Image (cartoon, rainbow, N blue to C red):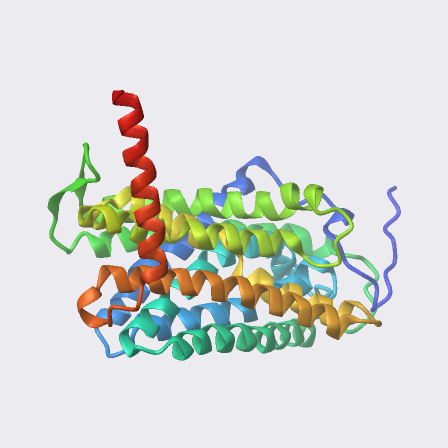
Length: 376
């Protein structure tokens, strides 16, 4: 008979103790980003349209609450919180997928930068937009710690003598029921959208896509699923190989900088042609793909891990990481604000937007030079 190890109450509880995945459970990497997209793009948007709450406030709440959930599930994933029943075992089993697939889609670093630029432009104040970024990041740092504390509060404090085998079977049944509920929830979101009207718009230059609510949500889900996968791939596999030995979580930093920059693609294309605003594909890429690929909640957890994980220099490392991310966010925010100003020149003074305007003129001259050389 297989001997079952005895764990102390403080022992780390990891998934390595048993095999928890089946082929059917891999659907989480699609189902969870889809559910998060329905929440943000359908129900949150409905709340915004039917109330006086602005998108800036809703995104800030989503990012901070996402950081809380990331701290909560990080404890179940790492083993800091030990299951004491089938329900908490369920949290342990799904924690990795929740963090990688759901929370990366639910929160958005790229969205935070874009919203900060919109606020700064509407209020004609660079400092207000920068303050939105700094407050969001600092609040997320507090929220992730609260989430971690809550996970430990509901976890087992007594010694575990039978690991999770006694809870695993029932936990899997709970996960199956939860999967069915998520599928029904996504279907309900589509049915809710079906109440709206449809219209035909030209997508980009050549492709004609019916701009229905269903098409928009389907593209948003598709790009969100791909974005969540791409962001975690870059952060977990690609960046660590490039920045070996780094004390900072460079994967998260690279994702936030790279996909935050790519998130400006929609407004950049609108500078050349306003009709790009109607492109469902470009909107899905800029908002959903880049939003899911940027890792706001993970950044908050990284700061907490640096702060508490190093007895010597933890505060310094966390401070460096926060500063580096704020600097990158400020740079992207500045560029995004310049683009916002160029898109709405009537609401700003002539000095604003001059940097991006000069860059566009340089690119236009290079393009004209290439065309001239090709003709010659």
